[in-house]
Image (tube, rainbow, N blue to C red):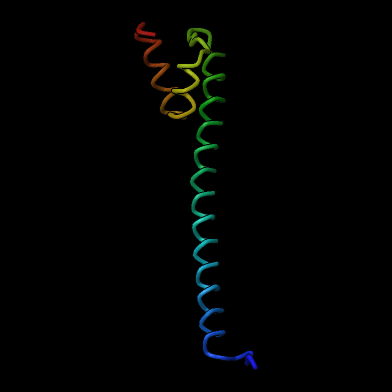
Length: 89
């Protein structure tokens, strides 16, 4: 008959608890990183639209500027504003 508190059962339960805690930790780390990326993209898009409200700045909205604003965030939009003020873009 199988005993409930046998050595293999206890080792198996400890192993599963450790494995589940590691899986939860990895999922939380991945979700934290993806949340930062999504937040950076939203801030970049919003700051790009706000920058276009300034009268002397006219940054065209196309896929290149959206990629720069999305991946660069505020720094990317600042780079686009600098390029536009220098007459390059």
